[in-house]
Image (cartoon, rainbow, N blue to C red; front, side):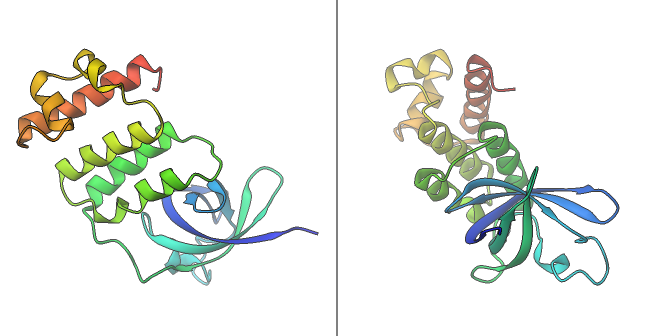
Length: 185
């Protein structure tokens, strides 16, 4: 007999598979990263169809399958939480997926994602990426930041420099250097 798990989740990615199914990537509070099949989700009469909105915070019911979890039910956790800017949320979801390919539940990662719905600027996106790198232990110590970031960007990270678009862009480049140095493609 299969166990059923009900948990809060962020819907981070979805792709079509088979004739009418969708493969959904969630990050959940109790289970960590979950890749689940939503059987028949693309059918016009599917009960899940309206609830599987990218970047929404949901309450899901899943059970283990042979290869993937199986999504049985989904509903919005606290209304539809898509208050951020879609391009920033998409960028962060892809970044998160690159760094958290499998996972166990992690309260610190869940806390980072709790700010995911509020992404509405490039600066907030970069700040959240830096926070994720720190939680994962990939952000270098403050005395080593100069290897990846300009002096102005290091000051920005340390909250001693005033933000401007050029510094935010320099931070984005430094983040990519960190990923390359850690062999994250």
